[in-house]
Image (cartoon, rainbow, N blue to C red):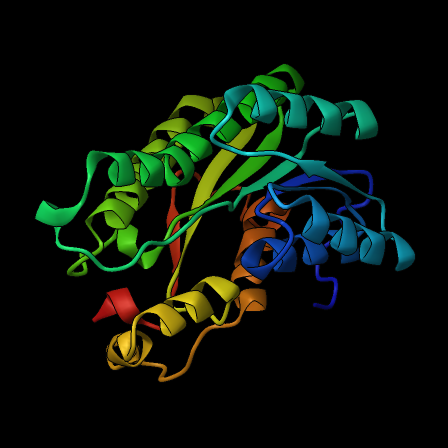
Length: 255
């Protein structure tokens, strides 16, 4: 991704940063001059990615963190601030998908697991990011939602419940902090060519092909296209955008 913005001297915090949309956004931040804290639960993938960033001359650190553990999230944010001196931009991207299952057949444990990562994990990250940004009186947060936050899809109750919740968190926090120099927004990706979508394709025959029939642009999205929206929402170019969820979905929810 070519640098579009000048984020020199600013610090970006990205969860789920070792691959997919998180990696694309972290790369974009780094190429635009930001200090980047790459946060992921997989220490091996994280080590490989951070080495690549530092070899390219970027200022980056890796932080192993499970976003379902509040204490780990708190420590991750505090480490990023201790290393770089501030927290200016955050992309709360970590998330999971599950196989399609009718709601009546979903266990409470499976429901709770989905919410613990895709909703409570977003909440925990926002909480500690906002504590720091509130002290600074500045910052921009972007949450990663999904087209599933706008619509329902059969068999995806737990996922869509979480993503609808992310929309609510984003809008409410946007209102809470707009007057204090902090902007909170979200992106809602459609069907993006990422490892998560590849896993869905392998697990459920025909699922991606079925979903693609409803995508007006008639192709998969690219992680870099989502990252471009994230960078814009963190930049001064979007300084009057607050509490919005921007669909990056090839027209899916516009139908």
